Length: 115
Image (tube, rainbow, N blue to C red):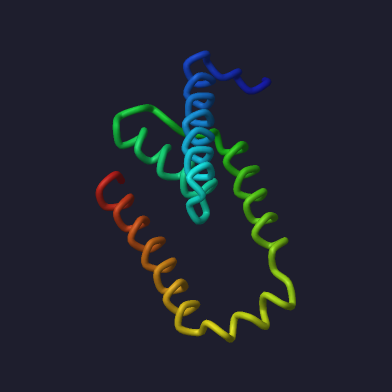
């Protein structure tokens, strides 16, 4: 049996999520904020979700986007980048610690508060 097609409301929810993310990314990019495209999209979608909008992406789309982000970030690594990392050891250590804390804290919050 073929998988069921998504309903009209599910399609609209995905479209709304994509539009909100694109608008947030464009706004932050236009404002020339660091990491504007990704942080603007993330903040806009998170704000809409906290405001009660039903947002989200189906797993296949989310996986494609995550893979694309990984490819993009991986393509930025070069021998020159690795050489330059040694110039900022404290900054790199703080960034790694902040990333760990944000990931762990978000996971703990989502598990405890939202199940």
